[in-house]
Image 1 (tube, rainbow, N blue to C red):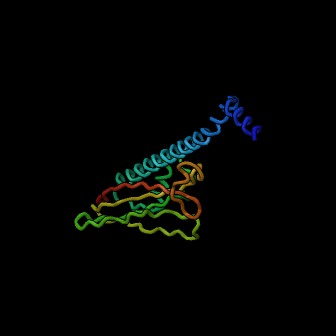
Image 2: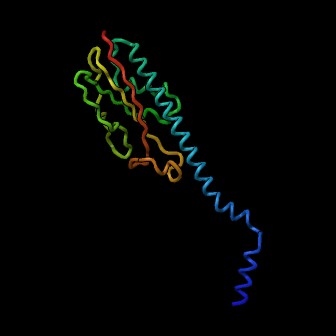
Length: 177
């Protein structure tokens, strides 16, 4: 009993290893913060590139009066303008919704995203609209989180394949021919 008591009193007075204990306590916190910062940076960068690509594609639609753009045309333009979106052609889904400004009904809040765990992913809605009609173009891009098990990546809502989604929206008026 006395030996155990003297051991603990010596252990309490010793100062060797203090830095190791501080390191062991603080290192996981710093790694967690680093992973969250990298994840947030990648999400912010990808989302800004998606917004830019969609805005530039909608600009092309507005300036090309009378052209009948289809889903794949605008998808190709959006991916081309977006630049850094990995596998953009297979991970991006567009949805064009006409709005009636006289009898306004809000479009559905859930975006039409690709789910790679499903075998078929049909386009939910694509309508080119009439002349002078307000159109909403919504893009949903799915991506794999950089650190899916730590930091921000752990709190993202993912599908069965482990992909998270980001949505960009733009609106324009269908110009007369």
